[in-house]
Every structure is written in structure tokens, then in C-alpha cells.
Length: 313
Ligand SMILES: Cc1cc2nc3c(=O)[nH]c(=O)nc-3n(C[C@H](O)[C@H](O)[C@H](O)COP(=O)(O)OP(=O)(O)OC[C@H]3O[C@@H](n4cnc5c(N)ncnc54)[C@H](O)[C@@H]3O)c2cc1C
Image 1 (spheres, rainbow, N blue to C red):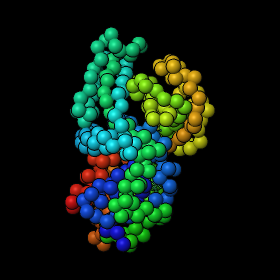
Image 2: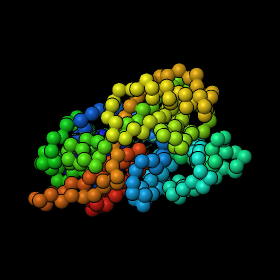
Image 3: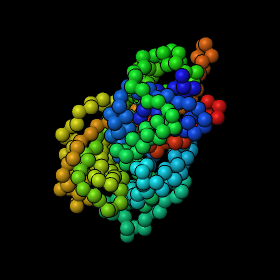
Image 4: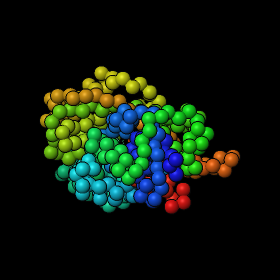
């Protein structure tokens, strides 16, 4: 029997498992889905705080994660690399509350701000190439003696009967497992196109839906949508067209790229990320770590370190 059971093998569960191993625990991970079929597998996975609260904790967790990802980016096998990124704004003085976590950003002078925007910033941030990074997280867990088990959990007693310490990293699955009605899906659709792109990543959150371009080694992720309360998993042709039209306006040379795949994921959104311990009536301990919304990759390492502290190391 492992000392800690982590339930969930998306980016939050796998990262939590690795940090617990670093602190000397033996760890087993249970997952209903193959990691390649989780919400985490759909993400563009750029470091960028989006749709996650509260700000003070998000700032702390994202700063820790930024530093961990910067150091992982030194090893190409991890699938993490640094990426130049431009974000554009409709207002002249955007609130860059997260900038200190990234070690600062460059505000572009007016002549470098693309029309019709009123401000823009440049920042180098980590991108996790998901098709490489998630398998790397799994391989690292296994190489350190951890176990990954395909098993659906139906209630916490079942988990606590198998390990003295349990961590809940079930993302949207916590809606049923914890009867947490605050947790809701925020639907995200991405279009992955063929080719490579040497320009900067691009983020435009000025409209009704977020727009982004995230270059990867072998393809380019174009987004996106953030549809609150929408749990449709099938790709929507109208969303695909809107994403490609958005590209036509902003990054015209990507407009004619061929579509490799269209994917949908449901971000596990909550008014605040739930990262807290729960002591059950019989004294057994559970730590909840879910509800990271649009920022799972941006917060994972910081949250995992806090879980380890809550468990006592
Ligand atoms: C289109 C899109 C783009 C995104 N882009 C970014 C980005 O650029 N940067 C960023 O930081 N974030 C991004 N995100 C958000 C990020 O993907 C999520 O915050 C993150 O994936 C949540 O991770 P998770 O591990 O909590 O959940 P998941 O990846 O959903 O994993 C949940 C795990 O719990 C397991 N589970 C659930 N219920 C049970 C059960 N009953 N028994 C056993 N196992 C169970 C599942 O099988 C799975 O293994 C994006 C999301 C989407 C959809």
C-alpha cells in the first residue's frame, strides 16, 4: 500500500504526485481516464493565469510554477520550452496583476501596438507541449516507483480504505465526488493546425471569447472558447469557423493552414480553487486540489507544493 493515494491523473494529479515523491512519500495515482483523454490533454498549456481565483493565492502558485517550468525547460525531454508571447488589450492601462509571477513584462510602446488595440505587452513564458509533457510526468512518476492505476472512484471511504493520506485531484469529477455544485464546466474548443510558426504566441482576451495562437514543435494550437456552464464535448463547427476567422484577422499567414484536429475540453471552474484539507469524522485526512479553471498548467507546481505542506512536509 502506498503512503499517499492521489486521485486524478490530469496535470494537477500527476504534478501533485511528483512533488509528494520528491518529499519522500510513496505514491499511487488512480484515474478514471487515460491521461491522454483528460481535459489536461486538450490544453494549449501556456503559462498564463486565466479563469482562476483568488488572485493572491493564484499569484503565489503561478510564481512557483513559473520557476519550476523555467527549470524544466532546460531539458528538452520534458516537453517544456520558453516562448515569446504578445498579449493585446482594449484598454490603455491593463491590470497586469500577475506580472510579478513572470518576473516582469515589457509594455510595448504605442508604435508597436497592433491596431485596433490600445496596449500590448511582450513576455517570455513557458509552454508545456502536452503530447510530450503529460507522458513525461507519467514516466517520471513510474521511474520513481509510483503506480498509475485505471480505477474509477465512487466515494472517499473507498480511497481512504486503501491509503492513510488521500489527495483529490479529480478536476470536474469533484462535482459528483464532493457534491460540489460550485464547480462548473467552462467549455474550451481548440483547432490544431499543421505546420510550424516562428512568430510569438498571441493572446487576445478582449472579445466575448478568448483568442490565442500557441506554436508547438510540430503543430500550432489556435483557440478558442470559454463557454460557461456548457458541457458539450463534441466540436462545434461554428466555433471552429469563428476561431479560423479570428486568425484571418489577427495572424493572416496562419489562415490557410490545414486543420489537423479539433478538440474540446471542459475546464473545471470554481469561484475559487479548492485547495484545503478535510479531516473526516473518523480522523482520516483528505486534501482537495481541484477547480483550477483555465490555469491548471499555470498553477500545478505551486498547488502541489502547498498540498505537500498541508500533509506535513
Ligand atoms: C481548450 C483549453 C485550453 C486550455 N489552455 C490552458 C493553458 O494554456 N494554460 C493553462 O494553464 N491551462 C489551460 N487550460 C486549463 C487546464 O487544462 C485545466 O485547468 C487542467 O487541465 C485541469 O487539470 P486537472 O488535472 O484538474 O483535471 P483533468 O485534466 O480533467 O483531470 C482530472 C483527472 O481526474 C480523474 N477523475 C475524475 N473523476 C474521477 C473518479 N471518480 N475516479 C477516478 N478518477 C477520476 C480523471 O480521469 C482525470 O485523470 C485549458 C483548458 C482547455 C479546455
